[in-house]
Image (tube, rainbow, N blue to C red; front, side):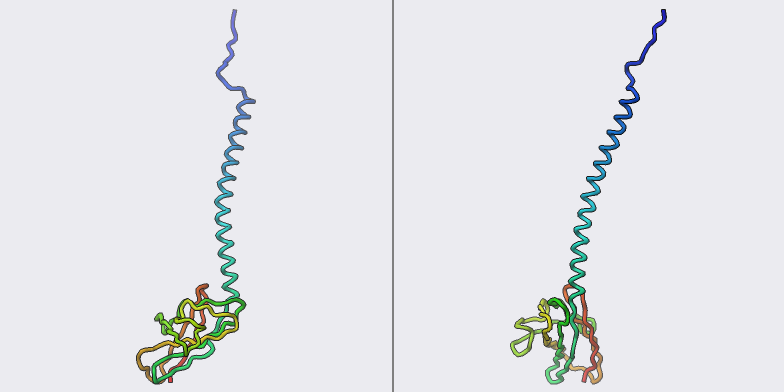
Amino acid sequence: MRRKWRSRLAVSTIIANMLMILITLSLAAILVAWAGTSFGAFSSGSQLFFAQRGQALQERFVVEMVFFNATNHYIYIFVRNVGLIDAHLAAIYLNGNAITATCSASWQCLGKSSATNLDLPVQQVVELPLNYGSSWTSGTVFTIVVASSRGNQAVATARGP
């Protein structure tokens, strides 16, 4: 008499298919959770970037006039905020070199002692005195850049007396 041996060690095809579906779904859930946190962090960073760029687009200021005083070697720069929000002046450059404008009570730096880190309200004019320190020759060309903390710049070119 012949016996038919059935293997009891093998898993049936139905259970094998169920296990494959379960493994696939669990891997998909892990992938969705990982991608959600990664893209969530990216999107919050991009929201902050676009909010700051929106503010930078609303910030506008211009250099209205540059006045030279040859007796004490000062250059006076008049900057007006023509934007929709307050400007925050971060730096002033004279011919590519960073210059600090020192303000006193007689100069209109909106009550500040320095023109760097100066908040410039909307539709206000500020007078920034720069001590050039040495005499300039007649006809010297100066390139003046006023930069804000949001990355905007106002550039003026003036010829000395």
